[in-house]
Amino acid sequence: MLFTAMLPDPQNSRFGRQDYWNEFYQQEQTFSWYATWDEMEPFVKDFVPDTSSSVLLPGVGNDATLVKMFEAGYVNLTAMDYAPEAIARCREMLEASHETTTGMGWLDCVSLVVANARNLNGVFEAEQFDAVFEKGTLDAIFLSGGQDKVLAYQYMNQSITELSRCVKPGGVFLSVAAVVTDFIQESFQGRQNEWKCLVHKDEIYMSNEGFTSNNIDGTLTVWEKIAAS
Image (tube, rainbow, N blue to C red):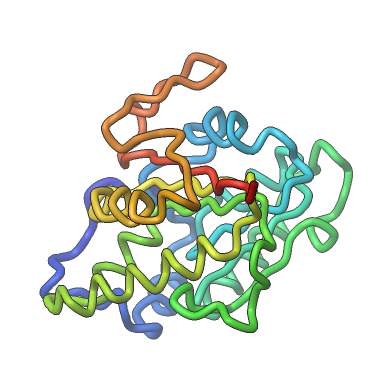
C-alpha cells in the first residue's frame, strides 16, 4: 500500500499514541509513505552510493523500503520505530525477503530497534551513522502534537536534534515530507554552521540516472553534515 493523501486532520490526530500505530501495523501488510523504494532508489544511491554505509531509517513502520534496501545490497542498516508491532512486522518481512546481491543474511546486515526519535540518548551514539533516511516520520511526529502547535513544534525540534546528532561529519540527512517541509528547511538552515543544503525544498533534483524528485508524492530535501575544519 502506497501512502498518498491519508494524513489525518491534526486536530484529531492519534499519531502520538503508540497503541494507534501498533493496531495500524497489525492490520496493514506494507505501507510506504510518499514513495516506494523503486522510486527512491536513484536518489538514495546518489547520496549514499556506498552500500556498506551505516544507514538509520527512523519510524520505519512496515514500509518495504527496509527490505528492498537490504535486498539491494545495503549491509549496515538500522531500522527504528517506537511501536513494537512495527519492529515485529519488519522482522517478518525480513525473514521472508529474497536473496540479496551480497548473499548475506539479514541478521548480519540489519539491526531492529524500538526507540522514540524524540529521545535517542543511550540508544545511539553521537555521529554513529553515515546517513539518516526518513520518509514521513517527521510529518507523523509533528501531527502527533494534534492541535497544540507549540507541542507539535517541540516534538519536531527534539526529533531533528536527536536524529541529526547521530550523523557523522560528512554524512547526510535525507528527508521526504509533505506537512513539515518548510520547518525542516528552516531547522537545518538554523544549524548552518553544522549543515550544508544539497537539495533545497524548492528544487527539483535530477538523479545521476535521470530521475527527477517531482515524481514522488512528498518533497525531497538533503543535507550534509559539515566536517570540522
